[in-house]
Image 1 (cartoon, rainbow, N blue to C red):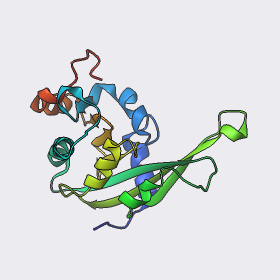
Image 2: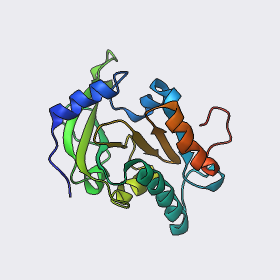
Image 3: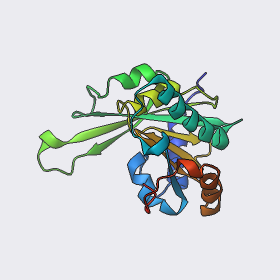
Length: 197
């Protein structure tokens, strides 16, 4: 069940909680690196699931962390689409299928290239709902298949962010100490790379 989306409230809240940039998932990791941790979705840092058993692991790992962050609370679920024109047509088309409750929150224009043929528009869709384990499994499957990207799940106060990507999830917590506690609970899901990637 999706709750009504107050776009102005969400925009003001984002500016207050995440002032270093827009809700573009891949930019948040660098902007808030002191509170960031990355978990891999599959053993051995395997990137893409190939069987239903591997999908079950991907979903379980994501839902386990999501439950730890958001159980008993409301969340915002954000998905993203792109277009070469301000009003579409949008890609990926599957976004609408897996996030039908998403309402257009904002459109960000990337018009830095002097050639208008290379201008792009990022459309952010959001819904507000009570968190329930498994409620975004279709979105997580789309991410794992590399069909969707830029997905964010955040609590209603936008204090914590979970960004699933094809291969894992970036999680940004409220403090480095909270990040360390969550990271230590799932040490077996961390990368062996010194950068944490």
